[in-house]
Length: 392
Image (cartoon, rainbow, N blue to C red; front, side, top):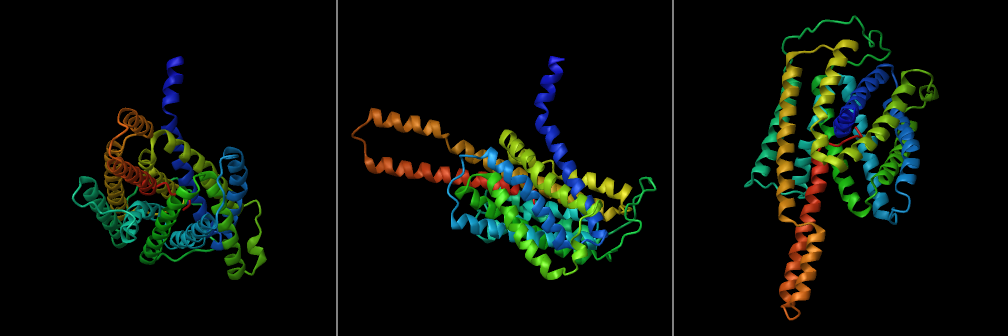
């Protein structure tokens, strides 16, 4: 019995990540059901952000009480920008793409986020291409493979794959049946991925100024709720559309706000702290498999060869990018000693040689600071490329 408990204890990160992917898969399904029920996108996003804010504010208050630094104007601006990218624009693109395509299609396309983030980071000169290293080549080739998979997913359908049927179709009589437009849906999904790429980059920059993830996420959700409320009031004047009864609309808003932006964030924060961001990111394709099976069995979605092939290619590209990033992190970690080791070495130098060259010591300290900065940037980049994008 003790051995079984030890095994289960060691499997906690694995079990939690599987649970997290199940939560994300459920998000795609309830979003599809809510939009098919005719719920306005902006109203849905507002309610999601509102539920997330109500959940995250007390969580941040108790977990990070006494740890929060001063809230500056720059941090507020970064949270406001994240609200726009992740809420007002990003989620609208995501939901509209979901209407034009399917839950499986959108789940596959949003695995492009790490590749798109790498491209945006290169354009903004936040990350080096590193073409002469194996890690750099892996990230470049992985990005190309992912984009090729997205093109295959969008342009090729192929024969339909039959895997049996449950005779259950939750979308059998939708109030708002969206027309199938895979090309437009793919473009919207790519725009959404770009928004989330920018969101994650801004979040990484904000983490340096305000290293309190729970508090910043709560602030981000508050900003998104205010922004989405303003947008929703402008685009939806029928107050009947704002009512949340005991139906799929309430389920979608509460589920995505509490579980996807709250519970899932806590799970990811714990797993990343224990195992690292790359470990957490390798489970992302599991959500795609869950959504594909659920969509086929319960939403009446057709599973065609092009969807399967395109999804496989995107996932392969994702893993190549993550392999390159993981290799880069390990290389930087080997080059840069830990802080305690630096302190021991610096103190031993001071004790052994009082008359050493101050210029040489100054240069060594500058080099150490530069290496530490590169290490921090690489770790931040790993969280970005790791695909920890809970806000989609």
